[in-house]
Image (cartoon, rainbow, N blue to C red; front, side):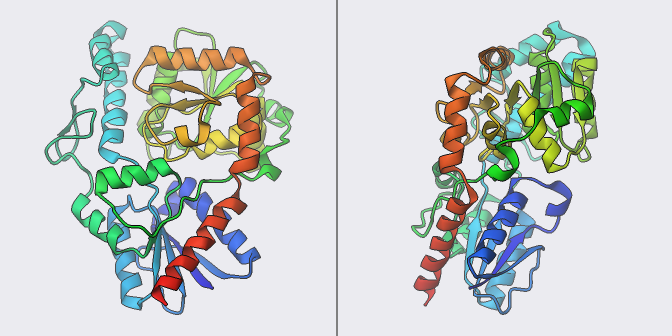
Length: 382
């Protein structure tokens, strides 16, 4: 097959799991004898390809143009939606950021009533388009045109969600009722993360004591400020590895909460990132909007205890082999992080999680399901 893999035009500025999935999928499709081209483009030239695979429907303007380009060229389309219930995610991320910003300015006592509303899911958050509650409901609160997105996904020839939970969210949020789909779980490359040397990171940073880390962009959706807030009265060192380019004020909020116990590292090459996972006591991702938590799988492969969120689709990957935290509850988050830190790498959960990632979450299996869906789509079109 001649296959075009497409991410939105600004994807190169953001990074993230969709870019990793495109790179790893393309590499393995080529190894299997396919002719593969990968681009970041809102109006890709689809002529001459047997099939186009679009990634990330959440950038709505880009997705609309991409689908139009595919249809104009008459080429079958597979979509990896990488979908999360956006209104709920924005409720949590914007709500918690506003409350913690107020807490820094006015003190803990002033923020406690609002933090309690967040925890109880009673808070109403004012977004750009209108107010939204914890269920993601509210007049004009959606940042996307759901009706248009619904029709675009129905017009695709096949869908490739990264979990069954993502598929269910597509059905609940966008009423997608198609039957041409496969589930392609994310993978991790064991050659990078399995046997990393923790001393590389220790020598590079001078950090030798146990620390809690999170890898990923520093932004409200990843909820690093709540992680800092939950651990503010402990002596635990926090290391955040990721760019704050798009949200510099959010990185400053994290610094204002944790002070000298927080180290932010803008970027690390993959060997040093792998070493950081190996050196960390815990990897904590109390996110409001994960479809998988690819960094949690990378950390797990190094044997690091993992804290996941109760809010996204991580449950399908982490199952019972992680500690879970409510991203809107500082006590829940602190308890999960400290429990994982005290349990250590020899606890049954990180050992089982590492084994599971090796056995089930690898890119060869991801591409098996991808290739199978491509063939199904082409057979239907043929």
